[in-house]
Image 1 (cartoon, rainbow, N blue to C red):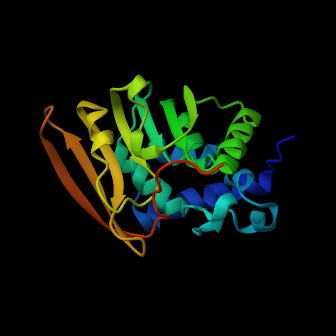
Image 2 (image 1 turned 60 degrees about the vertical axis):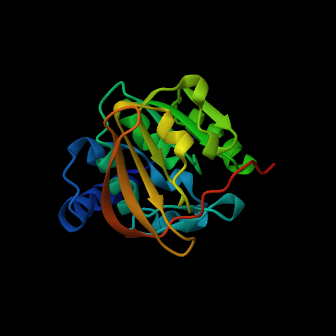
Length: 217
């Protein structure tokens, strides 16, 4: 049974106020989704009391759940609209996936760590949240069968730009991705203005877990 108490809901409201006032998130759809999604259910119970602080926590497979502020900023940059077809690279524990689903996006998501793939699938199902497609596979390859996508979000740092993902964007679509070496990345938004042309915007330094190829059973 999903345990989401009035205390949890109160802490979420405080977090959303923090994201609005201190971080500067202005997209009310993002804030509403983060107010709705119970982050504490995506992390180890020993961290539950701290789930609504702006902190990252370790999850399975030596990965981390991103800071709420990072999730909010990436999602705001994506400019999600209901019904849009979004490819997420790096399902992780499923929290970012849940935020996108709460925003009524059609989510296609890929995870290369089998432990996280299994955990996120079970957790999202328990919450009654269903991506259009959830894949265990190599994020670098994307999901060409389902392309083109309106938006692509990459939740792990890539040392080089995965051009295969850009091919899977529709013209007019955007991709939000952290790029750079493993110790620190810069967050970028690419907008596909034609089949061969992209506009690039830069949004400052972040620290993400590295993007890895292939899969890990």
